[in-house]
Amino acid sequence: MHKRLKILINNIKEVFSLKLLDKLSKKTKFVRRRSKITAETFLAFNTFLSEDICSKSLSTLSVRLAAQYNLEISPQALNERFNEYSVQFMREVFNNMMLSQNKILSHPHRKLNFSRILVNDSTSYGLPSKFYNEFKGSGGSSSKAAIKIQLQYDLLSGSFLCCDTYNGTASDGKYVEVMDKYTEAGDLRLTDLGYYKLDYLKQIDAKGAFFISKLKSTTVIYKKNPNPQRNSKGEILKSTEYIKIDIFELIKPLADGQTIELKDIYIGSKKELKSRLIITKLSEENRKKRKNKLIKAVKRDCGNINDRSLAWNGVNVYITNVPENILATEEIHDVYSLRWQVEIMFKIWKSIFKINNVKPVKIERFKCFLYGRLIALILSSTIVFSARNIIYEEDNNEISELKSFCVVTEFFSTLKIEIFKGELAILKLIKTIINTIRKLGKKSRKKGRKIVTDILDYLKISVDDL
Image (cartoon, rainbow, N blue to C red; front, side):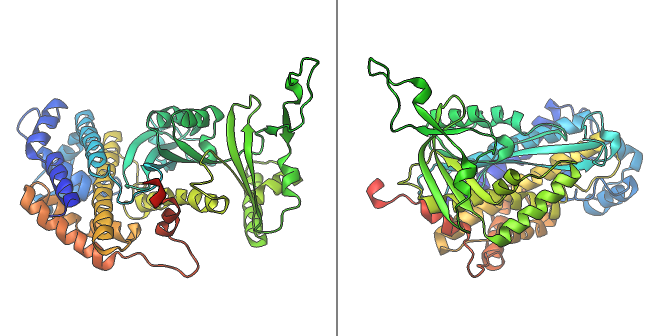
């Protein structure tokens, strides 16, 4: 048996063991007396059959329980089972699943210059207005109630470091404190402007980790003055030690597609963060696309467009502390583009797992649905990324995450039963799923487009580094 497969089976067996579920159900008071709906039935129902739990009637869900589990329960009795204790039970299983996934996927399948490539992003969606007290939205033309989910994601292993829920008005910028806790030496952080804080970038650097970040147009940058003025004692006058750089002057002469780099740049007014600065002027086609997007955003927010905002919108500007011997100038943009993998993940959440398919229901029912969807997502991603590693090691082939998640969900009707039966039943089913992904989940390569493997090749440890 492949080592990764063995780890996967053992951890799934532990998380979904009847003994553990019984312990969690008693701990959370989900089970206090004998009930028709057991802990494993409730978990399976909310995990594998929950796509429309917040859109179907209680009568329909009662019929589903009868059809799937031969359980006769009235709509009223089912409604009562969605309560604070069932929410706590689902949350406990979710937390265990998170810990389990990190154990399973902790070792990526490539030897690269970085131990992990971490991205953080959030996805949000509107909720029924009755959820306003717990999940506040922006109001106005937006939803009165909304939820935001913050995801920290390792692109190399596929592991979710953490997955936290907030109300829809929560600021991304405030989440950097949580992100900082998970940063370790050797990591590479691909940082979005929503999380842009110079202090945070300095903390990454101080931990021996690396970052590639977009630069805000309002950030001041400096370079060392090669000819500073000195006083009579030969000491450099502080006012002449650095020269302020006007990025907009750097942008003006650039030709379409041209990239320039300035080394040893100091970021911010305190000049405490030393970085490389990489600027690329976009093609005319891409500038037009961004301009149209900017115009729409400005109209929506009743703002104004000026020449400087247009100029900034027509370039990609990055700062990074990654040494040039690891990533060349022309490779920075491609590596940063790996951030789009988290957008693919959010697309999977909404298009395949229908996590945003919510109608006005009891708040506890919604929370059970939410944790059930997240458990299903984490379990599926654990299987998909274990399969990715195994297939790459055995066949040297890449799989499509989108196709592979679709494959796993097609096995949910079987998983809901077999996952509680023990090691042999789980092993047989997971082998079938992985073999199906091997055959039907291959990644398609589009002509002229780099895939993730091509970009990760930039980061391979050279023979000289070993």
